[in-house]
Image (cartoon, rainbow over all chains, first blue to last red; front, side, top):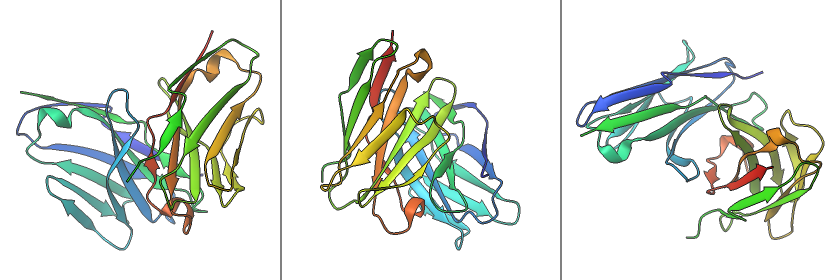
Length: 112
Length: 115
């Protein structure tokens, strides 16, 4: 079945630096890849998503890139701020389109 | 627009008891998904309901069950509770067409603790 691997598990950056989180997926039929941000005591919040017919998508300081051939996608956060500190999850859809499969998460810490 | 709401926020039970968790989706969403977020195990897909029907279930035993009501709200029931059921249970909703290819929006979860 579909498997999503996420790296790194923890990431520490200085305020203003960029942060990159990478995910790989196993099912070549997957065509939808969302990213979620989860703050302490809250549920995951959808921050950006990408479909397989697009190679890159950007929303202000956040961008996602997709390489279908290599079966990996990445989240890029530029000009990081302390409020970006959270756990970030990537996900892919299983072949049947009936479930989201999540990566294990990346804890991002932005220090000022 | 109101987001996904879940109740209760916290629930404490003992082994062998039964727990009922509730979820109200975003207005207009017909699909409801349930996930378990246990410490160290990430987000695990439990169940998907759409238009009142169970459409898919994850790799969980039958004592995890649920239903979706005509107003699209949903209940998750966990019978014969075990210590390892302690986790944050998250509900998400989406537009029905397209299954998990539609963006899912999450509530803040119910923290279930088994003593």
